[in-house]
Image 1 (tube, rainbow, N blue to C red):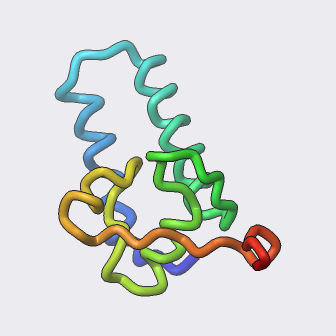
Image 2: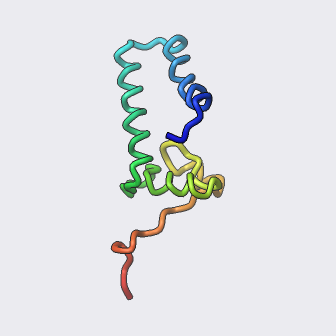
Image 3: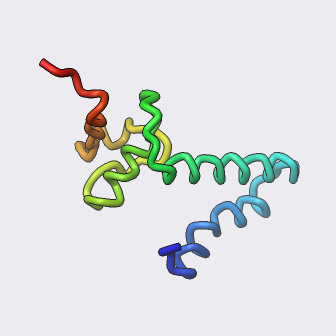
Length: 98
C-alpha cells in the first residue's frame, strides 16, 4: 500500500462531497462506490482485458512505470486525443511468429 494518506483523502473527497451536493438515493451512492472499487481492482490486477476503448490493467501498468502515458481514468480517448496514449505490448504467447 504505497499511497500517502493525504493523497487517499484527496482522492476520496469528491465521492464524499458528491454525497452531500448531488441529490441521489443513498443506495445509488453505495452502488457507485462499489463500481468504483471494482474498477480500481480492474486496473491494478495486472490483467489486460483488451476491451477497446476501456483502459485496463495493461494501460495502467504503463502509466505507473513511465508516468508520461495513459492518464485517462476509464477510456483511452483523451490519451489518444492529446498524444499520451501508449498501447501495451502483446504478451510473448500472443505474438505472431513469422
